[in-house]
Image 1: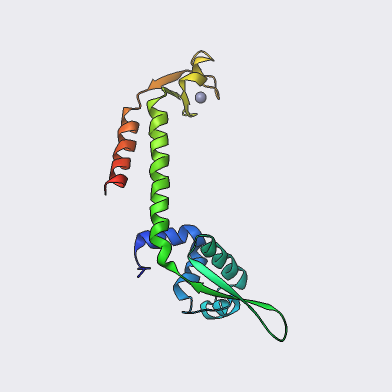
Image 2: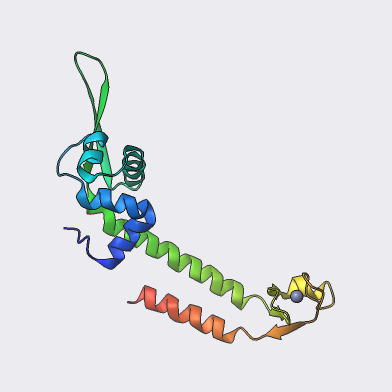
Length: 164
Ligand SMILES: [Zn+2]
């Protein structure tokens, strides 16, 4: 059973479908429904309902079945919400986040950093060493920046996420 009140799950859904889409997820009728029915029940605009259902489908959180009307020959799409895959989705996102943090840590470990006195930015050794340790933006001096704290913070965050 998926707890929609869980702030982590709510946050994930909010990222995926936005504030209006959340209303669709929270108020979606049980069983198979058409997008028009969802729009009526949830009072969310039809184009937003369609977009939300499509995003949910892409993330394997909603599914549809096509049914052809025998008389008109028209296809009807019957939608059904299935949030059971949401924990897998959370795991995938967590893995991606950890990977990104590890890449950042790796970059910090393999580079020396310099900052501009005028706060133009932070530059790696290769960039400023070619222009006599001047800021590539304003031309003023850059100062070496010890990145030990940055590395420690990244490492701490990675450990927290890997071993919660
Ligand atoms: Zn500068």
